[in-house]
Image (cartoon, rainbow, N blue to C red; front, side, top):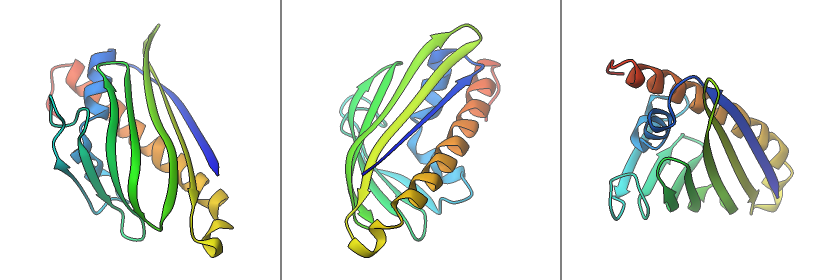
Length: 152
């Protein structure tokens, strides 16, 4: 199993950062994502608790369920299906107000089921660190625009 933790401070209010992050379909704006869709809306809001999102990254695809949603401080998810097949123990994103903005900590714990691909888990961990960083950079841009009253 691999654990990936990425922490960033985003210069925007916590509500704007949280909203920008949980807009699941905006994951499709990332260059490595072919499509991202909410296939089951959340119980109380589209991207909230119980939502199921499908992210297609070509070689990697994920079907994830939002398992905890505490606006604006926490979102957890579990990968329910993936290509390549994986074991996913935790996906947790925490948001904390700090001087100068919002600190975001994203943690995931995963493993690859395929014994041949399992040897590549460290490479997947590196790739996920990069992808998480890109996602948080995109989140920062959209949160800053929202906080400034612009549409992004």
